[in-house]
Image (cartoon, protein in one colour):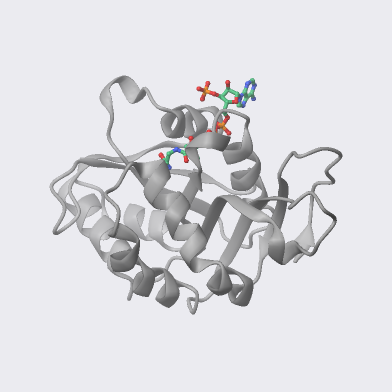
Length: 202
Ligand SMILES: CC(C)(COP(=O)(O)OP(=O)(O)OC[C@H]1O[C@@H](n2cnc3c(N)ncnc32)[C@H](O)[C@@H]1OP(=O)(O)O)[C@@H](O)C(=O)NCCC(=O)NCCS
């Protein structure tokens, strides 16, 4: 684990997590996801195989925020309070295919779609435990995750909310993410999503 922020008090340390470290903390990471998104208990069990499979994808990178145990013990005793990961987008991925079809139906030309989907990092998950939200941890994780990425751009999807009035939307807009698709419905999910993107480096 490679710390990127020093910590004087109990402020979380933002660290890059290897795939192995992430797998070891998978249950903890999924608990943060469920708490942050307000999903019903049990959702984590459905998600675990998918997050596990994502770990194998080309260009995968994960980051986390750890609160040290306070007794000088090892990294393993620290509590994970925020997590983010993503990987390089590719045509065989379900998300990529869904977005391609959404763009086609919205009237984008094949050439434009190839530019958007030709070389991007998919920001797949970004979650801060509710107890730790509001302190720019989300922003710190996002910046760390996108640091020195080789891709031309970054894409993500987030649920639509009225007036873009939640922390996720404010964060993405603040960092310059623009609309790629709005009110888009992924197959098998009735909720409308936005797909947002921007060029890299940030
Ligand atoms: C979205 C989420 C990751 C953001 O993380 P966070 O640490 O809570 O929030 P931020 O890093 O944006 O920073 C929080 C606050 O710091 C302050 N802040 C951040 N950047 C700032 C800046 N450049 N200047 C001044 N203040 C700033 C703001 O007050 C901000 O709160 P606001 O967005 O209500 O205005 C987190 O709230 C979360 O997990 N939400 C639930 C799950 C979710 O929606 N995930 C994304 C799904 S796509």
